[in-house]
Image 1 (cartoon, one colour):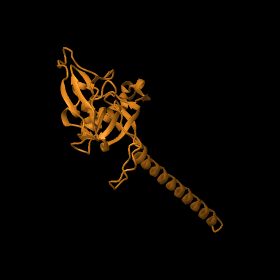
Image 2 (tube, helix red, strand yellow; image 1 turned 120 degrees about the vertical axis):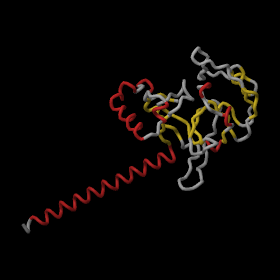
Image 3 (cartoon, one colour; image 1 turned 90 degrees about the vertical axis):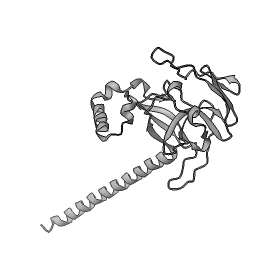
Image 4 (cartoon, helix red, strand yellow; image 1 turned 180 degrees about the vertical axis):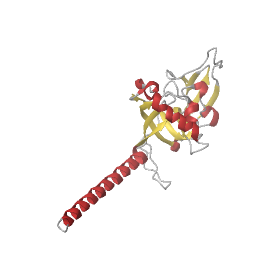
Length: 233
């Protein structure tokens, strides 16, 4: 018995050493993931149809934050902004009326631009913009009149945002322009897309959420939009 004790002690110490190293590696990995999410990019779900034809309900996006001056946690400081938003770019931003919400829209006009809409056609500084991505609904099911918006001047330091799904988008036509500093990133790629309506993604009732996520176990392969996996934006 006495001869076995040193061997058992060595084994116990070896096991503790492995656990300690595993714990340290886990902490380093979690720290690295946190830094990536804060300063480089993060994943998010699109639960509404305001950007359809380009981005669908159920698209899971990875978007870049590094170039837009990510915020340092627990402070109001931001790193230097390395990129300015250009006309036609899709960006994520804090909703001006409720900064806790993050919206995804297309910046169609910049500070100083004159923007207007006539008969569904967007005009920026007097020139018609060719928008192959924009969707308009003028069918027997959706009897929308062509979009009209009187000319507006975009204030300096702000952006005029529109959803690509023009007849089903709440955007700068309704709630005004977005300060440039509200922009926090731009989508890079669709890494997964699951076909389910907005009502299912937005339903916050615990029982409904549980049933919805449970249904993914049986419909994961049939309702995944495989052709969108890896789509660059």
